[in-house]
Image (cartoon, rainbow, N blue to C red; front, side, top):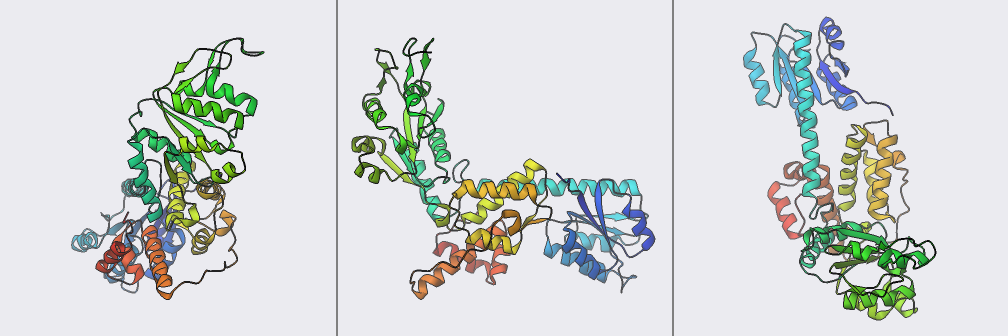
Length: 453
């Protein structure tokens, strides 16, 4: 994997100083500019975390007007950039003014390469710490439940319901397409419940062959069958005092459904090959992507078992129906894999954002995480492109007939959510991007019951 260097932009009109500064910053990829126009061009190109800026730039090398203008434009473009103003001993007043305009620090000439290098390194480290903190806050604020990244009204409603259900001992059934996060919600229910000190034991009913599943669930006694040379506890016993998570229960074989029903009714089990009834005290959470009502109609799932496992039901909407969550998840996974693979990818191109929003995501959260992970590994640029994501613009779907008011409201909601995600919840920047005032944006957030994260 190609290691991306730390980037530094040096804005200095003196060729001699340019040459000196180019080589004095060990570990940095140094970009040079001699005037304001070139500086802004280079800034857009390399997007550095740190900039050193000489205030005396042409066409006003004897003054500070060009340098100050350059500083203001850089800070307007990227407020988090650390700009170090390089100035003469007799120019402290302008250096202080530069600090008031947003510069990180100032350095007085004559230049000592070692000292300036330390100042730049310190600025870079602070920049990275602030970036990590912003990313962490963004993910934490976007997580109503631990591990759940969401800000859409649909998912916030699900999270509120989950919090209420978690405080009871009722059996919960999680319904949703593959990849919607059913296991994460099962874990959240366990952690918020009264049995959080116990174990969360999970078993996938579709992943284990039918002839082994009974032993996995209930355990077996020594001599129960050929090869059973010792007593083995099942998943249900291991979950005693905690939570048992039965994933893909819609695929549970019919022969086991009656045995599971007896356990749920009486809270006792018998190991395979055993005769002793064993009492078990635990909570049960089930999940499936199957349509259980259809399975019942087809005679593949017991109706009495369905009633027993669905005392409380949570429907997890697919990602395509979670307004605003797609970009939020994309940014969260980008931050995660930037850290994991030590990359510094800054975001997504406009085309990438478009295809991310338009893709239907049949694999839901699991699919978007997989695509972002691969894109971070493979991308060689500073922003992820549609090619990195291996996504192409989809055909335009046929829209159902909507009233003009519906269309306006949908457009407003999408624009607001997109702006908030793009600017990490910064109301001022989001309002500016939308060409409205902050009070207007706050009013719209309240009108549409949108979360300000």
